[in-house]
Image (cartoon, rainbow, N blue to C red; front, side):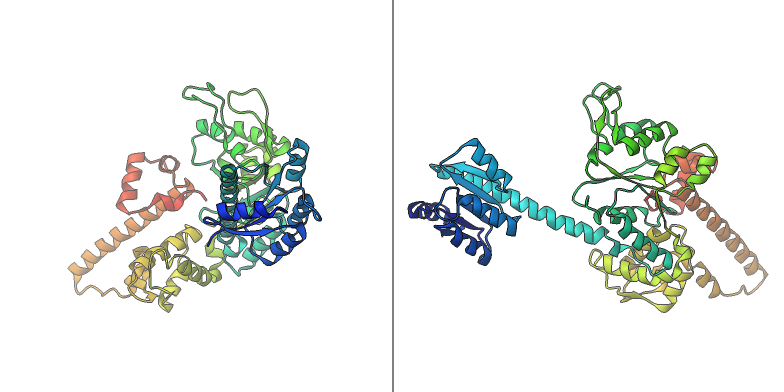
Length: 467
């Protein structure tokens, strides 16, 4: 369908000129006076309005004001033979997107129309994308009937419209970033950037540059000035994930940003001012970190204006059926799965499992099961071995003689050893946020030995990366 352009000019000759030149590419409507044009804008689906500034009766400026009041998103171009700077500035102030001087050069007009419609298309696409992001990351995607989850959804609605700093607490995989995004996309900053930085995933010697940016020549390799995440999040939201891992020397600089909304780039001497809303998340007990002198008390109290605590999945098991239904619907088309639900026995196993990786682990488990499932309902055999180990053991045959008993005891001992070993590695990865070196050092193991065990048990460290 062609874009519909309404041309308003009191000269019939000019109307005809536009119809001839623009007609092949656009659906051209014309009007000779402002009153008629206003009626057409109200009754027709107009994409662009082009009006002469000086006309008998309703002037182009009055038409501009009336149309902009009723349809603020409709782009308007002003034509004028009285091309003073003052008139052009005034028309732009009243809502015109551009102006063009008479006598009209049709090549210039066509270029101006193309530019205006391209900008309008981008604006429409951005609006559509923002609505899509709000639907993807809004509070509706925080699933749960548990009282704690209901309280979280209420809190999101209460704090989203403010600039209050929010501290989100919870184990890895509980959905801290989802809560942060819900706050952002429900706020008046929804059309601005949502920028994430994981304080645990970036080495401490690089974290300062990533946060604050750096000036050219600030250090070896700094070949040009680079903006940091704080500047990239200007007018929007900066999400500091796992802030409990931030080095103390950077904590004081973040405190200044929170208090003054300004900072200096690495190697810089001038203040950079920003308008950020800062949200932070941690799987640590920051109060204990303050007592242990690993986290600044002034930053803790500045962050802890509003606290949202997300319970682990094992403490809200009544939400598991809701989450299962949500994830099946979310991923069904992506993985072309026929699975629409789970068998009753499967649901019991999923509900009884402790979920050390929380909601993220549940989602990954269901995605795996959807891929493997050959029926409409996910079966027990579609689940990972560790989830159905108890069910397998219940159906195990007893040994027939002493030798069989001896062999079975060896097998059981080996399986128990592997089970403990696997859970040990999983817990180490969870504590280390998926970072192999950090996880290995936490448990006193060599990195290569730790990696060998990860490969042995087919563990994906991505499942344990910080939210």
